[in-house]
Image (cartoon, rainbow, N blue to C red; front, side, top):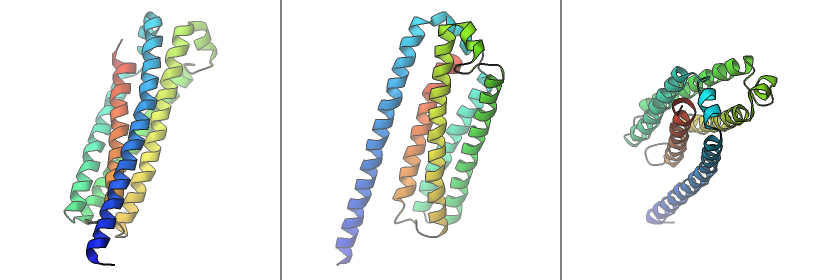
Length: 205
């Protein structure tokens, strides 16, 4: 097979891989879009309860996690640029920073969840049963939507971890970095979802 034919096949595979990732991202946006609609409907029907329940969330922690994800989106985008410039060391550093930031986000979320659970503010708790239907809906959506987002964070970390190891072992390089680029696209999706979750739960009171 000629070099031109090989290059053509690789280009076709890259396009197929990128198209597949964009289709996956589209389905994820539909999923969370549906959840945002559910949130809007329930909030409209329970405005006072949602207003009071939102005051139980820590805006500072939410803001810190927002900054963390924004920075991580920047570092993973920079890693793609670094590998295109054949800078393996910088690529590894930037992916590593992204993974560390993702871990810090999850640790912050763990402590935030733990605080709510310790105060009985979790789905099915007697405290929420006493507070009423609006609070049950708010914290049910809060735990489900932020929990689903956390699952996406973990999946993203695995995705980027695989990319890290492949770059380290020279299986990904400047002429074969589609996996890392797709990982970056996925990570931007995770960031985008949080950009919507943060104001809906923490800021709109």
